Length: 175
Length: 275
Image 1 (tube, rainbow over the protein chains, first blue to last red):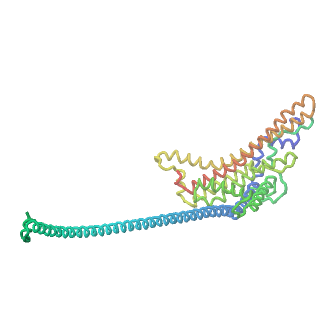
Image 2 (cartoon, rainbow over the protein chains, first blue to last red; image 1 turned 135 degrees about the horizontal axis):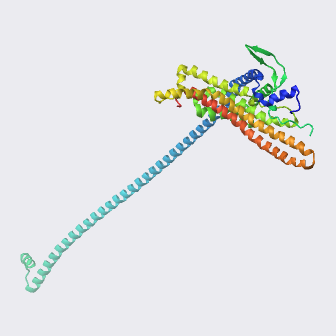
Image 3 (cartoon, rainbow over the protein chains, first blue to last red; image 1 turned 60 degrees about the vertical axis):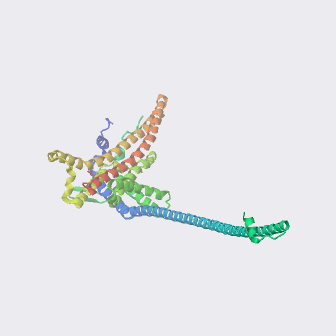
């Protein structure tokens, strides 16, 4: 390099000495073109790309959250229905149990009432029978006394040859 | 060893005219609107973006790959940066931040991916984002848009940005100048960060690329020099690894630029809330 002294080499050396980026002759053109290019991209992004891409993302998120909300609502509805059905079942079971218990109680009461009735009937019959027995016995006892008096009179008549008066008989029986 | 190619990693940043265009004289400034290799890359980048979104911005509920990619790019700005940093009020600024991100991303990626053409000697690509003129334009545009927005939204109250609240007033004599310096240095750091990252990466890749060729030519001369194939192959391996790294840097720097722009925007949109 040192042996060459041509102009081209000199300018190349001048370039090599400093960064080409600091060569100010290209700055205005680059800046102007870059601003144009950047503004075109900015307009494109502002008017087309950003609203379209951002809008799509928002639509998707709304759809997803909407779908999730729908699913959640449906699940809640199903759960509410299941709960209502369970409540109904429980109610029905309680009603059935109540009816069964009522029937049992009624049957029990009927049985008890009948039992009481029968017992009362039996007791009344027993009492009547006892009363009948008592009258029969009293009658029999009375007959026995009469028979005894008759027998005593007959015995007295046979032994004494004379009939004993009823007063004597009554007094004898009484003693 | 007659004509060894000179190792000049800066050559790739040289601008040359492709199609001559009109030259305007604005004041003392000469604006050459010629299509240079830099301008051609910018236009290609813009066209890639427009064609990509025209094809992928569909309205399907179930996205295909292209639509998913477009939506991911949008979500990086909307859900990762603007949403968490600025909040709901940041929605109107998504297109601007997204444009920043996409333009830097596509230009960065083009400068790495299309560099494959350089192997065949095709000058397909040009690292537009390693041009300070371009990164400075982006940085200054962003900075002054935010600055103007601050004054439009808050008027003179915007200047309270430089006076941190809850501070004894004598401290303000120190704090206000410091805050102002750190504020107005922002466009410089924004521009230099992107410029430096892209410049450095491309210089290193170019250096290793030169080694591959130069050492390969040396090795072809035969004899002991054949051993030069070893570093040549190693350099090639390095290029492969560096290309991977540069792809990461390309995406990361686009993200960092967008993230910082979002943070700066947040100070203006939520003035006095975030401090």
